[in-house]
Amino acid sequence: MRGKIVTISSGKGGVGKTTVTANLGLGLALLGQRVICIDADIGLRNLDVMLGLENRIVYDIVNVAEGRCTLPQALVRDKRLRTLRLLPAAQTRDKSAITEADMDRIAHEAAEIADYVIIDSPAGIEHGFRYAIKPADLVIVVTNPEVTAVRDADRVIGLLEANGRAPARLIINRLKPALVRRNEMLDANSIVDLLAIGLIGIVPEDSSILTAGNRGRPVVLDEKSVAGQVFRNVARRLQGEDVPFLPLKSPSFFKRLFGAY
Amino acid sequence: MKQMPIVLKGTPQGLLLKPQAQSWDVILNALEYALQDAAAFFRGGRVILELEDHTFTEANLTALRALLERHEMELWAVLGVDEATQHLVREHGIRTRLPGTATPAAETESPETIFAQRTLRSGQRLNTPGDVTLLGDVNPGAEVLAGGNIVIWGRARGVLHAGAWGDETAVVCALDLNPAQLRIAGIISRAPEQRRRRPQPEVARIEDGVIIARPWTAKG
Image (cartoon, rainbow over all chains, first blue to last red; front, side, top):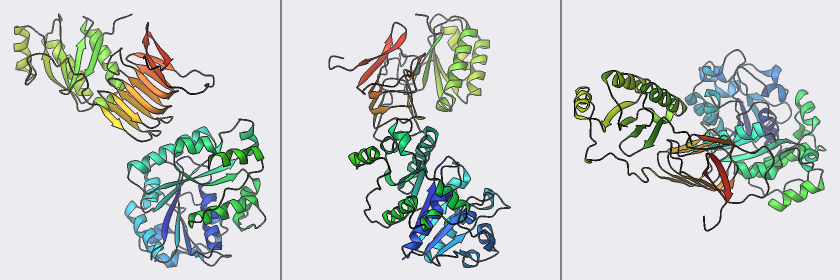
């Protein structure tokens, strides 16, 4: 049976697509799943850095698309979890180097040898976005609790619907419970209300996520980290498990959340 | 209230243009402005010009056609002109009466009514010469443009434009009416800056030249 293709998208840049891709990929690998992460952000290669695999890259996705190497040759195996592999983006090319058909073919070929193929989409709604969502069975839309990010997420969901594309799930990243409590930040309920798609994760603002990414050792690998637990839970929800949402520090926030779900 | 230089109205046969001003400079200016505003919507459409006591020379005809062509529209018919002018117009291959009707297509109550059940998301747009009924929310960044009335059975947050071709009797209703911008005919109002109290169904219409939203009551 072929694996599931999941694209991580957002519209707006900088909301944490690559962080989610890295942590979700490792999270699923921790559960024993065979995972292939594809960095579709050609020209702005990041996912390899966040996974700490930069110095192992030989071939990239454009080499595969152009037939210079096979897909298995280009895959970089994770140094910690052997069931995770990365198909890196090319750094010296741009988005025009691959077509929707290329991405569709490569992702489906990857899905033959993995349980999950996770595609890290480029920001924007242009060509890079379109080829990234082309093969998806599921699209995870990442947003921040900011008006601009939510607006762009809404636009992306609209484009997915208009194209009859895959179902979408939502991850709210960088939520600050203290700000929400003081009514200074959008709360999860209002975001879910507006975007009207299923919520699959709420990631609290946590500087350890950033530092872990900088060190090439994503936070999901840290057993003691709350943020790591959040990503491990998202991975389990993706597997179809019904995992309750974590209480985020503030009790009043917990109550709000529970009131709604 | 100040009269609009032109009235535009969607009909099944095409966009009906009724000049109100006498001066062709004023008319063409107003038309250019209106078409710029909704260029994508009108593109490829045909126009029915309905005149009353206007002089209509060959120069006027040429200027109007050129303007419409720039917006990828076609002058399809000219109504309400005297016989000499009819002759001139027909020489240019433009009809002077609508097929199947002896009178102008003025009574067109609901030309193209849209009913939709979904969330209208940022960047999406609903438009029609007729009325719009939406069962769902209009999210921020979305747009509804109707020649007639707009009814939103949900939360209205984007830009709503009713009576978009000059119908000042058009109304906008929503269960929670809090659009970024609300337009009826040529009148524009912005959302109030302060935060809203409890949402309630409201109806907005033009009263004394400004848009007023009032809580909906069964008596309307």
